[in-house]
Image (cartoon, rainbow, N blue to C red):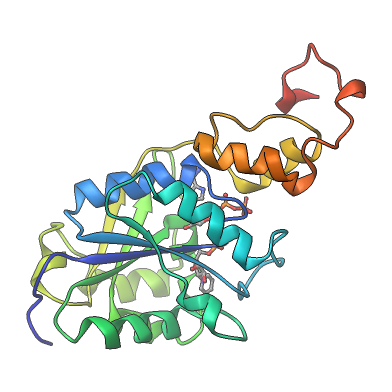
Amino acid sequence: MTAGQGAPVALLGGTFDPVHYGHLRPAIELLEGLGLSELRLVPGHVPPHRPQPRLDAAMRCALLETAAADIPGLVVDRRELMRSGPSYTVDTLAGLRRELGPERPLCFVMGSDAFRGLMQWHRWRELIGQAHLVVTTRGGDNAARPPALDEWLAPRRARHPGELRNAPAGRVWFHPVSRLEISATAIRGLLARGFSVQGLTPDPVWRRLAATGLYGYPQASRATRPGRLHPHHD
Ligand SMILES: Nc1ncnc2c1ncn2[C@@H]1O[C@H](COP(=O)(O)OP(=O)(O)OP(=O)(O)O)[C@@H](O)[C@H]1O
Ligand SMILES: O=C(O)c1ccc[n+]([C@@H]2O[C@H](COP(=O)([O-])O)[C@@H](O)[C@H]2O)c1
């Protein structure tokens, strides 16, 4: 393998239905902590492994662009929206690798829960030939990995983040990020019941959600909701 050249580019894929601070804060911490030149948020068109998104791809993308606009280094990459069929990561990385050339360090970011299931991903062994894997860890997350995955990991595990700059691909780095108890599922649930999600996503995203009635807000019957109760507990 050739030596790495230039600051790493990273990719964070997801459904982003919708984007929230649980995506954005770890992205900022990765940009700063790993000295990335950019972090690309990659909305999936047809997620390979989960129920299909509530919002169409164009709207998820528009909200992501609204969220990324104020964060230096964060960009939205629409490449998965150009492909039909399931959005397999191995294809996404191969396309980006062709654009960046063979020497630029490229990192694919995934949560430690996703990493535990890596062996079920499409052509998973090929991922590490295209990119490094950056596995985000959050305090209290100690679940065991399959022994076969640990065996595969041992010779590839990076001991220092500097290793991500020294090669274009091939290493696995575990990076701690803040744990924010926010999920898109919870946001969709709040909006469907007519509650605000201000503070869970940037204000420009919230204003767009509120103005366009996405996910059912504010048509849901606020008159009948129990006003004294915290929205998470009713
Ligand atoms: N609160 C969070 N803190 C850290 N990482 C997160 C958080 N929420 C999502 N992520 C990570 O962001 C990526 C994209 O997540 P995704 O679009 O599936 O969001 P989500 O909020 O988990 O969605 P949903 O609730 O619909 O499953 C994944 O790698 C996921 O692990
Ligand atoms: O390529 C695969 O087989 C594959 C299987 C599961 C997940 N992924 C990718 O992992 C990223 C996070 O997915 P998720 O579940 O958080 O929406 C997203 O970019 C998905 O395309 C990819």
